[in-house]
Length: 125
Image (cartoon, rainbow, N blue to C red):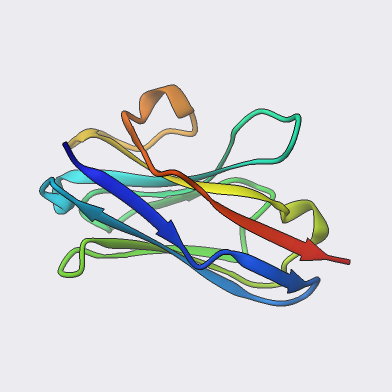
């Protein structure tokens, strides 16, 4: 069984930056498109960003476009989410997820078959 482990969350002031990492193991990482989702208390899990297995294409939600950047390092089996200009409404548990092999990314959580345990991001205003 593969595993996804997120790290890098924490408490940051509004306007600050954080970089989340998601380390993958147990699978051929480069075969999987990867996504980041977030879930605030009492709300549904929302799409944030995704990157194709090849790394050539990315997808962002409108709420983070221009502030967040998703990237991957297949040699390190890791996907990153660089977050700038953080806002209080970015506060949530952030999850990374992987699609089935060689599958295009979507914004739909149900299309992702593998999930990490999440990392908390708290932005103070």
